[in-house]
Amino acid sequence: MKTVKISLDSIDKVKSFVNDVTKFDTDFDLISGRYVIDAKSIMGIFSLDLSKPIDLSIHNDDDVDNILAILAPYIID
Image (cartoon, rainbow, N blue to C red; front, top):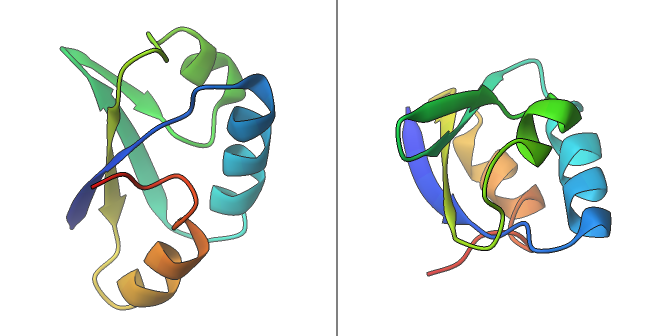
């Protein structure tokens, strides 16, 4: 499992992010404070405070480099 910080600060970013993660047959969790949301759920994402960075947990150790390459526009350092 790999965890990175992401930023989803616009509606368009959320829509494209959900489209990107649904391409993978892997579980993704978004963690904001004590809330854990399925990253493939657009309704769940909009229930989070999107003004702050969110932790993304990727539950796949085999293809993580490919996943990170596709999700690079959302990842912050």
